[in-house]
Amino acid sequence: MSTVTRRQSAEERRDAVLQAALSEFATGGLRGASADAIAQSAGISQPYLFRLFGTKKHLFLACVHRGFRQTLELFQQAAVGQGPDEIFEAMGNAYMEMLEGDRTALLLQLQAYAACYDDEVREVVREGFSELWTYVARVSGKDEDEVRRFFAVGMLLNVSAAMELPQKGLRPCE
Image 1 (cartoon, rainbow, N blue to C red):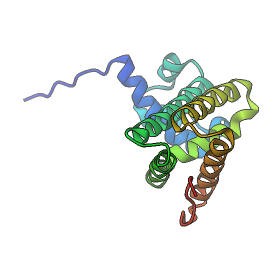
Image 2 (tube, helix red, strand yellow):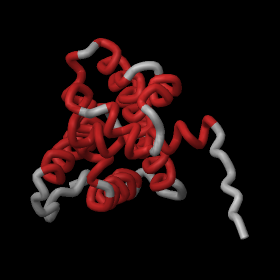
Image 3 (cartoon, rainbow, N blue to C red):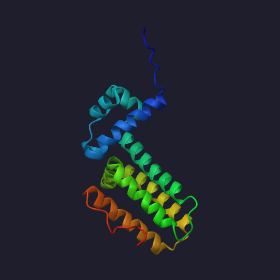
Image 4 (cartoon, rainbow, N blue to C red):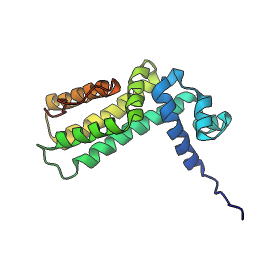
């Protein structure tokens, strides 16, 4: 008996390529990542990779955009039902769990910041970070200094997690 395999849609294929690209970009960054390795990991040809995304940089930008969107969604889920006194702690704890459970997302985020030498990358990173900042400021109702502190501790958590340092004593709302 033969098995019929359903062909993936272009959108499903794009998603599979993004998944493959996340790991490559997380370790290699924009310049060091190999388009060939991404294509092989996704099970497609390199020409098809470029047909889907145009350039390696556009693929990187899609990954960066996805990372910021996922962080925003994480904050949104954590904020549900939280009062103003608990919201930073809820979002901070959710973020710490993400850092501990998804090293690829963390490293990709750091690679995005490192690639801000490029104007297009810098614009996507600014936009993503601005969306996070705006959301956190709006739902928390906290003043600018408190929001700044929340993000400053978050950046400290990023660096600590990248070095795989213990996270004890590092809480976004302390």
